[in-house]
Image 1 (cartoon, helix red, strand yellow):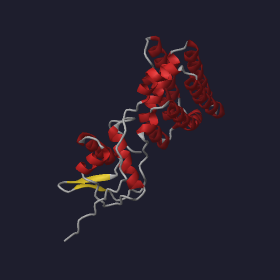
Image 2: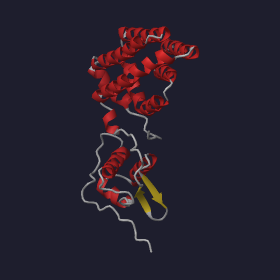
Image 3: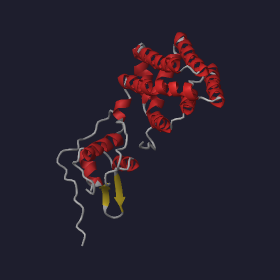
Image 4: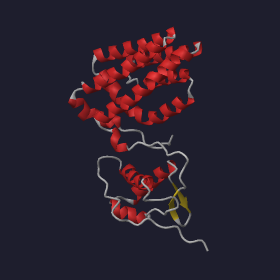
Length: 267
């Protein structure tokens, strides 16, 4: 007879969660950390729902959502009538961000720094590889963004489409997948930057000029100019975030920065 899989003994590793972020994400983060550091090994059974409810001081609904998140990250599997078990280690660790790090002003700046590192190279590759059809899509994305702003919209979706069109032109599927994953979190950061920029006419004009500089470099096929224009765009976005009125951040920033966490997928 096959021996039962060992259960993880609760030894104080799990702590009551706080109200500073989504409760289910905090529970999932604690469990994921135990798996990543080896306290929970492949084949180990997770604490029962009742144990997690008691030690983390949350509801059963929160625990179930946390387990669902771990399943989406392919860290655990359910066995009907038996419980939830740590999966055999995947060949690649899933990329995941702690939700609690995505709601502060400093975190939004850090996310834009990630964008700067990626999008500067994306723009350089796009300048080298873009086709006439790619340029048409990029130019249309710029027009769509301008029209959305003129109509009183925030332009978030159109801004994302503009940068996605450039990424498509770069022709690197790994960069596309990375940006698609990060987009789940960058959407919130983009909402913050767009809302902040909409508060000042000079900010809006700067963004439009920066987009134009990127497009001109792409049209010219100038790799270095495209890289510099994209990097400068991100640098200036950081400057604009730092210069935001503190009242804006307190009233709008944290709400807009919240990532859309439903249905996240690991890279």
